[in-house]
Each structure stands twice: as C-alpha cells, then as structure tokens.
Amino acid sequence: MTGIFQGDALFKRVIELMLEDIRHNPWLIDHIFSQLKENSYLADKHGQKEIENIKDWFASNKVSIFMKNRLDGIEYPCVIIKLGSSIDREDLRTLGDQDLDILEFNPEDIDQPIPYIVSPFDIASYDDSTKIVTFPTGTTTEDVGTGMLLVDPSNGNAYTIESIVDQDKVKILDTLDMTGVTRVGVFPQYPIYRARVESRTFEQQYVFECKAHGEPAYAIWLHDVVLYGLMRYNEALMEGNGFQLAGFQSMDILKDATGGDNVYMRNIKINGLAKMEWVKSPTRIIEVAKLKDSDSETASPAGIKILANLPDEIADECSSWQTVEDEEISD
Image (cartoon, rainbow, N blue to C red; front, side, top):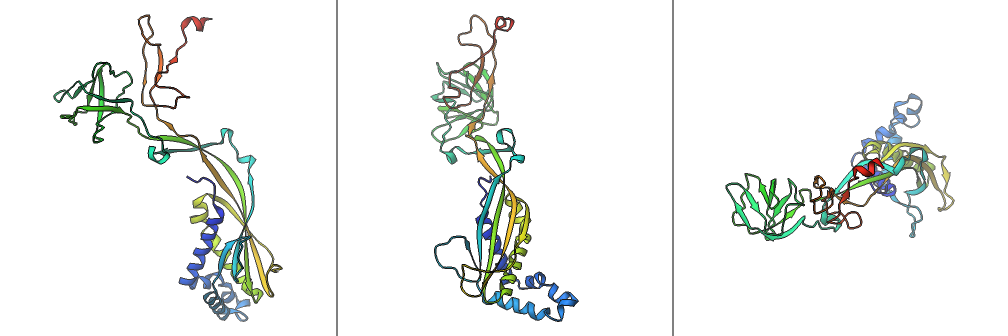
C-alpha cells in the first residue's frame, strides 16, 4: 500500500545510507573516483593521492542532510533536499482511476465490528451422532449459508456449518463436537473487509543541493558521492518504493549566494514517475446468494437476497432485489 509517495523522506534515507556506506566501506570512494588513477591522462596529476585526500575529507567532515527552508542555521558540508514540481500525468490516467490492487482489512483495524448473521440464541438440541444443530422456534436458517460459523459467545469457539438440513436445522463438520454448547450465534465465514485501491501517476521532481565550504572541489566530491548513491539505490529503494524511470541531471558548480564566503554548490535534479494511491470505502464480502421461485404462496417477495451485512444505505438486513415479471418484459 503506497498512499502518497513520500519522496523527501525516501531520498533523505538514500543519501544517509550512501554516507554510512562510505564511513564503513571507504573502498567505495576508490570506485567512485577510479578514473583519477586508472586513466593514464589523469593518473600523473591526480592518482591515488587525490583519492586518499577525498577519503580524508569525508572522514573528517560530517555531511548534514535536511530539507529546504529549515529554520535553524546551515552547517557545511550539507545536502539540501528541495521539492520540485509534481504533475498529474494526463497520458497515464485511466477511466475510474482503476488499479489492480484490492486490500483486506481486519474489523479492528478500521473500527468497524462485524455483526452476527443471526444473533446468539439458545439451541433447541444438538445430536452428536448426526452433527445436526436444531434452532429454537422463531429462528430459521433463511439467512444462513454453508461455510458460515456457529460461534459460542462465551468463549469464541467456532463450528463450521457443512450444510443446511432444514428451515431450522444445520449440520456442522463431522470432525467437530458441540457437546455441552448451549448458546451460539451465526457468524460470517469471511470476517474481513475489502476495499478497492485507485491511483494516479505523477511526474515528480526533486533537487539535491550539494554544498561545501572552502574549495570548489569539495562540492564536486560531495556531488559525485550523492549521484553515485542515488544510482546505487535506484532499484532497491527508489523503484522498490514506487519511484519509476528516474532520470538525473547535474548542474554547473556555482558559488552559493546565500552562504558565507567560499561556499560552493553543485545541484542534482531527479525526475521520475510516482504512483499516488487512495482506498475506497471498505465493504463486506457477500456470504451467500439464495434463489427461490416466485409463486402466489410465497410470503416474502421473490428475488435475490443480499446477506452481507452491508450498510443500511446500500441494503438493509431485510431488503430484497426484485426480479422482473414476464408481463413487464413483454411490455
């Protein structure tokens, strides 16, 4: 479940992990800046000596990471995460914002208790040889379906209904024993809620300002390490958390006008697609649909009766969906 993509927190964690990696695995710096010693045109002037200088700089400087517009002072070196544009991609929209995901919720998670199909009652009789439970007078199996549960309200023990024997009798599974049970209620076999997920895809942009005090080279070193980390963790942390098709752009090195003397910065822009999801109202699962013929002796209207404990505005406990009479069809 994604919800609203939390890019600022995610990218901050990516950079933190990269800097932690460097502290514990300085050999990563050898790989990041390997051209300085492996390229014959650079080795004489830079070589391993400059790589060691880069290691020493990262070892002796704590890099702060924070969001743009923080209220307290800025410490250098630092990486400032700036939120860019977020555009709802019209070409990636779908009718009804359809998504493939369906979520399941336990009743306690969404504070919507599931009621009994039939409220607890004192059973008339139970025959352990046949596993048949007889309901008391006035309580019928009209709303009961195979697979539902007879639940003892005193301890929560449940007994699965294998079949409906009569209007006032049900049979539980042969492996179960209700000896000594005197009071039960009929409970749904699917005590959960389901909700459809809908989504839209946004094109997101973030900017990482890599700032360092002193030499311009320090800002370049910090930029290269941050870019390396963004690419290194792209699959695991970015794509794995819903940020797709990331593209990178680095800017020129500039003197930071908002900082003190000799503060330099080089920025990285990243663009990608992020899915934003929301959950529709959770609904109950339909337990059973019972069909019966219409005739003049039928006491209640013929049709399809919904037995799912749906909210009153959708279908109350006694509502029926009417079928169309033959005469209406001919008309």
